[in-house]
Image (cartoon, rainbow over all chains, first blue to last red; front, side, top):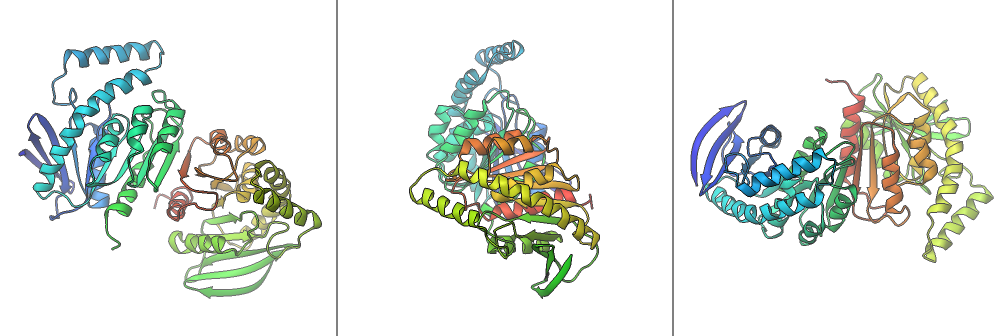
Length: 244
Length: 244
């Protein structure tokens, strides 16, 4: 793992890194050192490792929770090249949405294929980050594409001790979810135009975890209320930090 | 409104009162005075104003939120006499549950009738408490029977600014819920043996409020996780206290 640039602002140090072809970012408190809980952030479809929502979340995990946080670009996202198939997929999704056609099945198929690539990438990055002393217990935060990749990742990754998922559904994911036993907080948008409500509810039901909480709010796919980020911080504090 | 006994313990002052035939309790911080947000707590079926869960919740609202809290006994509960019809109802519910028969419709009918009595009682108590200087903005916390009474109460009571409801459902309640516009946090137990899941989800969907959040957790009717109380406190802090 090669760290490239580093900058600090408002109490947060941001270090960019590269592991093979995977670019990523590690955020940590500027004024503290030593191992601390590490939150992996899986970005959504069409987003990337420093998209505004990812950045805002990472900074909040650092400043409000005292955690470290990390994000990587999924294949075809951010600094990674798009293939002809990626471009075709994007064009076809846009055309369907413009025509008011449902996109859930097409999205699911594409995201499931992406997840197969991202899972081993996350594992390698996690190995390298922990070897570099970045973290103690590990959490995962990712909705939409971030759940399509994060749920299979967490299912085969015992170092991940708690996760926030959401804005996702479908039978393939439900199968992966049934293997999980870690605490899960699950976000659902009641009027999600991309994920039918019943699919989201069924995915929440499928998690094998004894401790799981569904947080449903009105609004569309990208309208998760800001107060849910506070709830995510408290969730990780509850599950990743000691009784002190 | 006549205050009868008063005792203070662990930072909380508990004052019992009576308004006509309605007995109640007002909790407030022992070390502070002056108006503060007031949380009305509606107890569940077969519970009463100082049932352990009501008491624990009231103390938490006072100690963690700096709020005042109040509870009253519903007719046929706590210190209030049970009628022959109440006794018959209790016996019939027990027999149905023992036989594994569904109780939702029977409970709904009985609780709806109770709610018609409790709503004007709560209004009179709220008038008297505010006249006695007990509170600023008002919140309501009540699940199960506490929602059967609280939802119609909040619908016609503009002084109630935010409410936590849950563990309830049914078409009559859904109609009352559609009139609400205040922020609502709604608790649902995924494996509720008294309220079918679809009824709870439909009731959440029916609230007219733009700001409403569903918190669903695994487990039966009486197994709401303890961390939801922390969430209720934060919800009321968010909606009943100023930006300071």
